[in-house]
Length: 96
Image 1 (tube, rainbow, N blue to C red):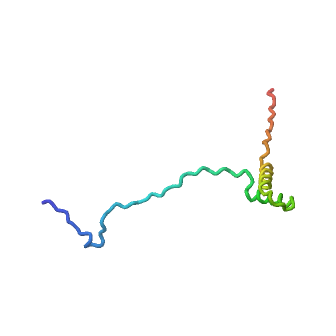
Image 2 (image 1 turned 120 degrees about the vertical axis):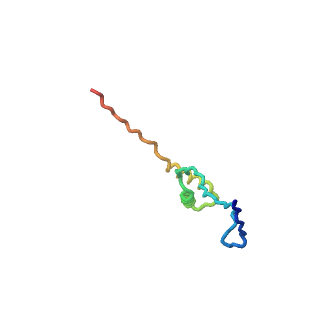
Image 3 (image 1 turned 30 degrees about the vertical axis):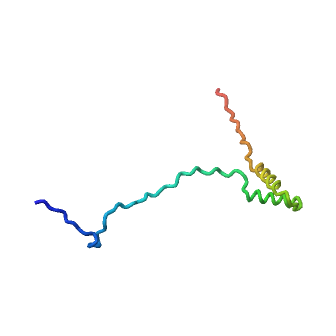
């Protein structure tokens, strides 16, 4: 005798939920960002402070803000530039 499958009405039995595909999202990894370039120059705050000093040295004369900023930036970049590396000379002893 062949058995016939039992049909269950999902609405009549609350513990049975209709099966449907469940969407599961995989966590995404953020794209590997390139490492930011190391800061080698002066910050905007440092430039602004030096530009303000130049403004005060000139006797608070207005209208030279761009010149003060550029002068301060040039001055600070020149002072922050690394010195040329010093090569150490290696003396070898003569074999003998």
